[in-house]
Each structure stands twice: as structure tokens, then as C-alpha cells.
Length: 117
Picture 1 (cartoon, rainbow, N blue to C red):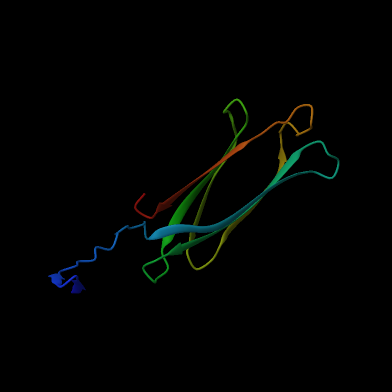
Picture 2: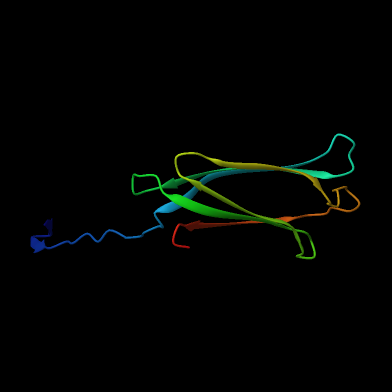
């Protein structure tokens, strides 16, 4: 209760509530590069997934890379459990390299699913 100017006022605190999915993408690293002869592209990926339920669960992580015309450069699905991080390396990718005259940008999408989909 809160006393204001001689009158008793009841005050009720309402905390905002929110929820999130129990399976979460905790962190990821995506690094693009070139081969030693600068002719083809490379891609290194690593992700850490956590489950807020306190136990290890299986998951599927879809990793997709699209070029500027929204055409897929690669599509990869990684399966694992939350006790270890997921990682893969790709070499020999046919990509358009970035330069100041032609800044070729790519879009990376990640989709995390639990074992039920």
C-alpha cells in the first residue's frame, strides 16, 4: 500500500511478460573468402545452439546463401545436438567477388528447427 495525502491507495504492479522459444541460436560466425589462386570462393560457418530446458536436444539448422538476384549459391542443413557446436567449410564456390566498382552482396538466412520440425 502507498500512502498519499492522507488517503490509502492500493497499488498493484503488473510485470510485463514475454516468452521465447526454448531452442535458441546462441551465436554464429560466417566468413567468406577466396581460394589461394583467387578464382573461387570459400565459406566457413560455425554456430552454437542452446536449449533453455536444461538438457541436450537434437536440432536442424538450415543455412542458405543467396546472391543479389535471390538465386541460391548453396543450401546446407546441419543436424546436431545442443552439447556441441555445428560447423562446416565449403570451398570451390562459384561467386562474384566484391570490388568498389561492383559491390556484389549476398544474403545469408538461418532457420533453426527442433526435432519435431
